Image (cartoon, rainbow, N blue to C red):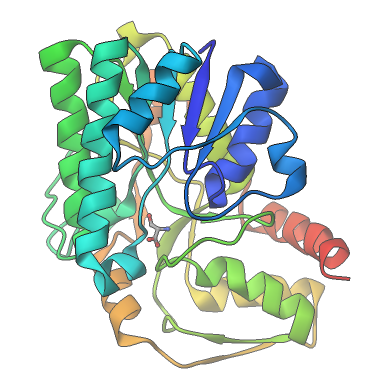
Length: 316
Ligand code: SER
């Protein structure tokens, strides 16, 4: 990775990944691509920023040529709950947008990182210790686009030699930019509400276990995979990666250790509950550990301490 383009750079993952990439690879070598949401001044001033709409192939190609990009981290995507509300938009961004990025990468010989998700699994997938290679019959538009995306990336590698790589991210917990319309967002909101109001009403029910990861590990996963020796990668485009698995009761109990007055009640949202129930309780990420040395640093206790420290200052 020498000249990098990040699409969706203003989003939850992009906003932090872009800054880390700039620290590692040099500010001028990391082009931040954004579309609808404008970046903060600090973010925009930290290096090149360009409007990049992945559904506009000419626009993507123009930026890739302008900066002589060799690696695209394609983060622009619609998350699961929004995808259920607007399936046409999700299809256009997640499928047509990805196709455009892969086409430009083929022409300009770029490597491409594309996040897949726990959403690429479905109700007939084994829910516990979900294997790397298993049944993938998701019943959400988000899941359909993610499975198709994994296959499309494999296809571009095998057919055209495009160096595509990717991970199946779990819910990502962070404190810089809020996630936009996912099913796992509760695990971020709960920290903000615990600090602001000492209470939280959870839209997923008790006992709903999902894989989760703290942002520093999510960033490490993307960079380590892109820097990995390609000769060792058998599962290029869809490595299961996880750091922890919990349900709302467990995260609430962990928060209570720091904020004893914290209370949580439930108002279950049937749409997001059904999505969550169709996803794994916990994935097996042995392939990522073996093929490129994946090893997360944060478990629930360390993450909770850090989230509360950072957010207590930020929300003061
Ligand atoms: N965090 C995502 C979502 O909930 C899962 O990939 O949609």
